Length: 121
Image (cartoon, rainbow, N blue to C red; front, side, top):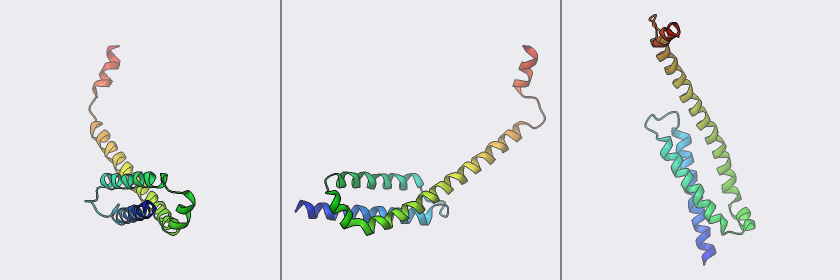
């Protein structure tokens, strides 16, 4: 009975993880209301649950029972990693633009405090 219960729980968590990844892949970079931090917390929780469930499962059974679902999930995770990286690169680029704008605004032709310190030394 425990094997069937564990089997159902693994399939359930894999399904939930797949939904989370599909949602994230669809919304990241498109939906300004999308909360990547919350989505990442949900993914982490599912991965933790899978780790605990697979710990008590025979490795040969895992390979046979879930191979198709896990292969599909692997492809989605690859897409997800690429989209998250693109999102992080975009955030970094915007932060660099803002940083440059602030530095340019500070360098508006007036002298900074640091420039006066050199004369006092």
